Length: 440
Image 1 (cartoon, rainbow, N blue to C red):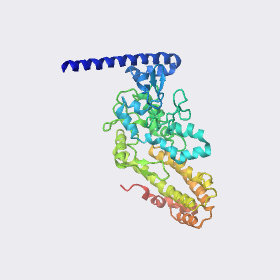
Image 2 (tube, one colour):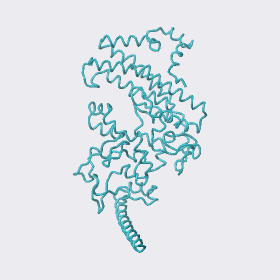
Image 3 (spheres, rainbow, N blue to C red):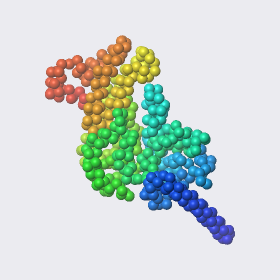
Image 4 (cartoon, rainbow, N blue to C red):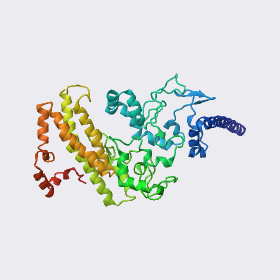
């Protein structure tokens, strides 16, 4: 029995040695060829942590013959696409966290109004090079392609990419290939490919905030290359996107679930609480308390929640009620969404200005809260949206608007300037808005 066990150990060791020799041979071929033909790619890898730990091309790109995107290349089956499932071979915990995160669902935009608008008002190419480039796409197989991937869906590094092996996501959306730098992923620029623009200007808000200002003026003090990167210990000058959303604190481990500290979903027309929103808010407060006291932290979220509630109650809910009434009654000249003026006005009201206001308040960007946010919401609501709704001359719609404008928070449009100035001076106008602040 002992001899049999010794024989099996010897056989296993011999097979392992042969596999290692084969892998080393294939790995050597990859490196020699790519060093010559794509030396930028090679040098990125050569200076990476992967190279320092003997992780070579074949370790990531090696594939089974049966995989949908596998093809024979220089004596080995490989796949161009490296998915979270592949990365999870070594980074198992991180791959699981990504699969459970909000990022992994980003390609669901393919079924949303955003993608509908891009496809019909723009065109399919817009959806591919615009929407899908950030959100991800379903990667299609083309058996006639040299690398089995359809040119319509590859290249694509969208954060919610749907891969042929069933996994969702793209690790290199944040850890750019082929250096996969941890220091890079800790910096706000890593997020700014996607989180910018008229509908989710987190990059611009961050840059305009005191957090961003402090980061950019003290970037060399951020200790970005540190193996551990615990806020308050390894660095304390300023937070980045990673600090607040995923990186470690004294009480929380690093997590690749980007939503675990988010209290609100600010994407839809009317804001929604996330599941377990209280614990998520407490997770975020834990980050804030590294540099701020309880009074400061609680005060910020009190003000932020007040703005979100104000936007929802004063503008988003009435506008949504009105547009739904008009659509359900079939009042629009053209049935297709976005083929009428009022559809575009409503869309920009919540999708652009409304989001900017909410994100501005969340990230302490006052210019985005007001001038790029609620200022434009109010302008579109009172001077574009309501007049466009009245043009349908529907009794029920007009009655709704008439009643709405009787509310003291809206009736200012029919008041004299002097009356309003007196109301502000006496604090009477401010009292009307107290109800939008959280009660606790």
